[in-house]
Length: 546
Image (cartoon, rainbow, N blue to C red; front, side, top):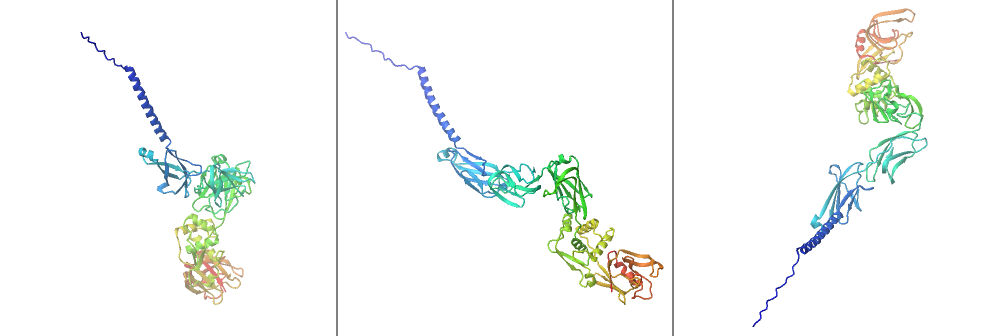
């Protein structure tokens, strides 16, 4: 009997679900760690591949490229308006190769080539843009109190590499510093100081620095110095050691005599008076009342004294310039031509020329000017031709006729010059007292009339010389004392031109003319006197010669 055996069943190993999940977590953890590592590496590469553009202590700027950043390929700089600024690049420092202006804004572009292994992902180059402002060095204190004999030290808010002051041009400093000593300065004064923070900068805008000696009251630095000459149009500057508001409060200084112009306050310590029109009067003493006692000195620091008033002397106008203006206005028998450019027809330019006359040349306006008239001329010195012209100008402009070129004459003369006014005509009368006596009238290069005339008798002679007409009347009464002591009274005398005391050119009814018959006057026939009179206004010169 066959025995059948039953096969044994196959027993399979079974993995529990919890085991499978654990394995999966391990795998995912490994992947996560790898991803984090890769991300960290990438972040580190990015972190260490940066490029920065920053300020530098000596250069315009500094470009810093981190280890994975790559290589600096080129740097460009541009000023306002796109002006290219050449640069020297060394160790990442950008130094301009041309002078920049302090405070100037510069646009900088840097181009960096990335490493090839990084360039495939981020691009082969990187561009960085930035804006840099050239540094500005400013004076820390503009008003200094400096003991006598001590140097003047000017401080800045940052180190400077170059300075200039006074007449000293740009001076480079061996080492940048925050203060500069101004050698050989007076006890008080002002100076314009300019500085550059970097060697590659131009000097900055000059700033006025003032210094004062110590005093128990505020110190006032006057320019011009007290007692100095002051041109009519010159500004007056008063710089105080303390703020103006503290020194004067609300009081404004007063000028005497009154002068057209206005006060300004350029800064907290300074008052500036700017004249207008024709400024201060010629040939006058100008006084400034400060209304508070201060210690006043001039730019040199000499003569420090406590006072409430400052005074200056306004000079008279130059005789030479007076003659130039009278010639240009037609009141002289001469023309004047400047050697250079003509004086600008503005009050300021004309006032300056009145004190400091320009160079030029006088020439006789007429080719046949009488030798007697030519002999009277003296350039730059008072003479009868100039005196007569001033009198004629005064009479023409309704001024007091005193032959003195005072402030009113100058102002009117300058106003005419600015307006381009000009008169035509110049007359001259010369009398020959030798028998036969005669009078000649010359006008504008022509002899208008020659007439016999009478001069004074030996007991009352007509004085020889040249005199300007000072009174001009068509009819009048003449009276006086005869040589024998008797008196005369002659009404109705026609065509009178007084030129020397009681001596005059006039008509007179005589039986004859050509011999001494008058009491000092120059007598003419009625027709001749009538013709001469219109040509002899006030200021016309009359010469009496043998």
